Length: 96
Image (tube, rainbow, N blue to C red; front, top):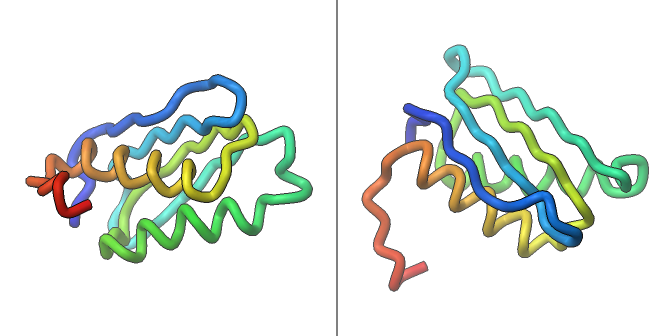
């Protein structure tokens, strides 16, 4: 899947995360993470973000994640939505 435009998902409300994904140089993934709990959960947040990128075989993207204490399931859902919006993928939402 290729990122062809900017995709945004999530809010800046408590217990949520805002994901902004844009196209980037070939074969480069850059993740910028802002979080008040970064010192505690950075590794796990990045693992979830990278997991979604790997699942969709995305090798070129810039991800900006502004975390406000989101759970793993919320991070994954926001990433999935941002990726689908940025790729203009034809998604069968009933299957998801």
